[in-house]
Image (cartoon, rainbow, N blue to C red; front, top):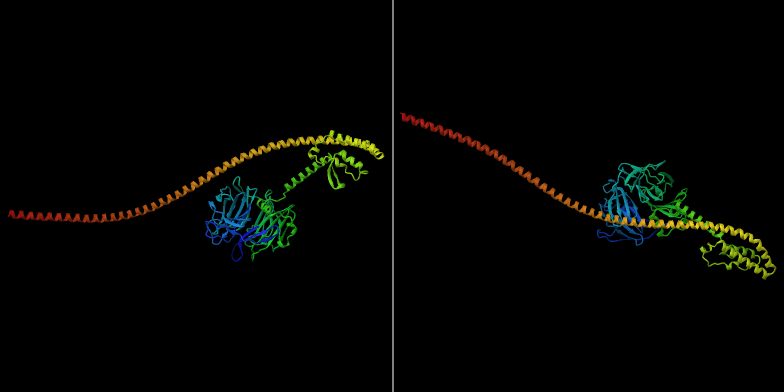
Amino acid sequence: MVVFGGDSGHQLLDDTKMLNLEKLTWDSTTPKVLPSPIRSTSKLPACKGHCMVSWGNSVILVGGRSEPATDRLSVWSFNTETEIWSLMEAKGDIPAARSGHTVTRAGATLILFGGEDAKGKKRHDLHMFDLKSSTWLPLNYKGSGPSPRSNHVAALYDDRVLLIFGGHSKSKTLNDLFSLDFETMVWSRVKTNGPHPSPRADCSGALCGTKWYITGGGSKKKRQAETWVFDVLESKWTVRAVPPSSSITTKKGFSMVPLYHRDKIVLVAFGGNKKDPSDKVEVLVVLQNDHSYSWRSAPDVDPLLYEYSPSTKELAGHLNKCAPLYSNSSVARHSLASTVERASREEHGALGTSLHRKYGQVEDCSLAQKLEKLIDDDKYDDVDDCSSCPASTPKDQRSKRTGADTRTDMARTVALKEENADNQGPSGRRIARSSSDISHLYNTKITDLIRRNAALEDQLAAALESKEQAEKNLSLVMSSREQLEKRLASRGKEAELLKEKIAGLELAQEESNSLSNAVHADNVRLEREVAFLKAVADETRKEMHSTRRVLAGEQSRTFQLQVFETLVYCQKMSYIMGRMST
């Protein structure tokens, strides 16, 4: 189990710790950070509220509240073999930075939902991240999905259905359950039967097969410690374990991962903070029959539980697959296989396989030789009469012996007995007399063997027909697989074309944005010029009005002067006319 970062109560942490799940001991490690061309520092930022998921030999770290804060969501990868951290240079529509979100993995794809951004706003957006191409894409969905929330839990069932439970909304703590079917991309609220958990956030969950284990959590006023189990197929909640009040499951911010060991499911919990931060490790042991649950601290764990624990690679594989090692269906198949194998051994034993326990070894002999050995045991205790058996004969050839072969063996055995009777006197004659008593038993056994051999031949014919049919089905499956691979390749090409089109659309959008900005600037400049021209026109109008007034005054003065001059002229003329008349 890889632990990174968190809150110590005084500051955010940036250290990496690894818990050996086989021994429940902490391994000392000092991981390195691979330099990145897009970051000036070669150190992981301290953070909390992030998500970590496993992928092969790596652990992927997504988001979290860091110091200093960032605008975009960052994705880091930790190689558990080389113990090196590296920043994944993401492309595409990168989501905003956030904490308290959830990240689940389906193959090489991460599914991100919700969380709280740097401004404290709750979100309910859905994004996917392709681990191979390091590309973010938003996911569009239908239906009324979960409300914006953070510190919820999520699980991905069968790589097809995303489950979301609980969390903090803007004003309250939630206990609703939603599912998103990726085939239809439709959200729906899950209707459950019977009791259900109280509203809670900051809980931890682990999906094991069809059972979703959700531990701890609570509201701002009260913390819950019990472990609830949601059956995905039955849509039913049940309470499975109630740990003591001192358990770390009553704390806020603890982590939990599943461990699969033989017929048990072990949930390993670490950390948390109530009044003070905790460094304890606790395990919840769940037996396969679902009747025994108990939380125990790491020092009190039964060491036998980890005596035959899987190797590190097997454990990493189990953690990636997140499915029990021994499910009910696999046990049923194992039992069926054992029954068939046992029945086959019994039938082959009826055809002539015997256990010779006197000398501590297993020998394959015909029925006639076995009976002969039983007759001669009282006289030839130190002789192994099965030494003449064809031990080197393959098992399948011995299983195909017919009744005629068995009769030949019996005749050879009787001849040997008669020869021994002639050579060995009274004891030989005693064996010869017993041979006539045994002939009836031989005939009975031979008849039974012939009947069983016929039945086995019928079964063999049916098995061959089944094999031929299985081979035909296999060829059909292979052809279907080739067709699917071709379709997948064509889909991949279409996806590449779509990516290129999206890139072209993004470039076109950038160009249109630049053009719109230029047009906007021109409009602003034209508006300013129009306003200036309007002001000039207003001044011109005012000057024209004043000029008109001046012209009108000048015209009135000119008219008055003309009238005055006319009057003066008339007076002069009248004066001249008066003088002339005088």
